[in-house]
Image 1 (cartoon, rainbow, N blue to C red):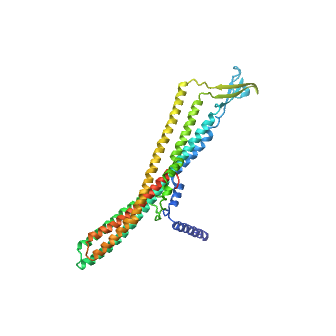
Image 2: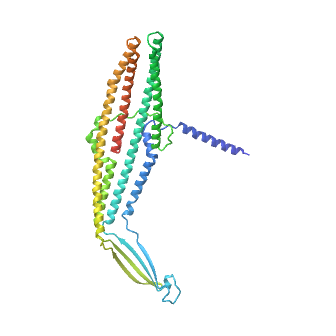
Image 3: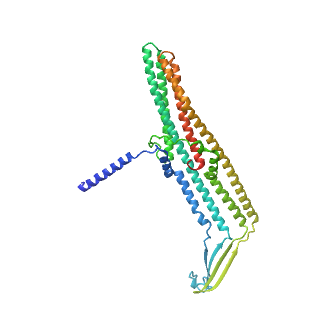
Length: 424
């Protein structure tokens, strides 16, 4: 049986659980603003976390790369039977003699520094790759959010047009009842409404797909709910999109170019190390010998490797030269591609800005005037219903052009910021 205290504990636990669920239910959903989405992606995305871990691992390889090799110790038991006078023994004081050897390998001057510098530049290259991964991830999040806003705007526009078509249907029914219009006008209005509802279904499916894609970037369940997106920031001014200034920023901050720079520096140090390997390395050692219970002999050792395999070394040197040439060519190719992408996106964002401006200041007002005139003329039996539908479609097309231009501008802006490796 439950005691009073057991019942009280269960009540307290149930209250706390209910409070936690209520707090969780009241927590705002992500998806409304872009900065929150970027913060979640930076914290949770597994691909970016993997690259950060790889960058940390590469950084930790710098210290051992420039360290001395571990010393070696060896012990030799000599004459363990004392010329056959005793059974074999493994105790140093009971054998004929024990030789101890302690050796330390000493690379030639500068080789350890070169290895440390190579590891440092390799680590910088991996860090640049991690930064590039974040830039790509941030661009995907920005584009997904822009797609959500685009679909949200299209859905809102479709609902407005659907409401308009319902009102036009009522007007057509009134005119048909009065013998001023054909029944075909009512049917056309109903067909337009059916088309709008079909488009709403398609838009809902596309919205679910985009939400699932964004949730994957945020490491959330694919069907996790997202808040309605807020309007994104306006496009930068033309002064902020100066091609020469952005090209200079891209050259100095692009993660791919930074990674290629680190690869070039690493290849240069690798070439220098390959040529320095012509000089032999050394090994020094000390070797005391124990007889009975005392050390009576001391030997100093000096060992040097002889670089006789010249064909192998020359091949390594040619390899280092080829690696440097490849790194230089790779950076040139990357720079050409990055600058071409920058120019393409600058042209795209300017086109999107102009299209939006034309749709807002010219096309949309003209379409609205045309529709209002057509509606008045239809009510006065001066134009047919088909003319009214065409005027309505012109308004819809102008609004769609406006929404699409804003979306294209945000996509181009996200691509430019990916090339820069930072927000514009």
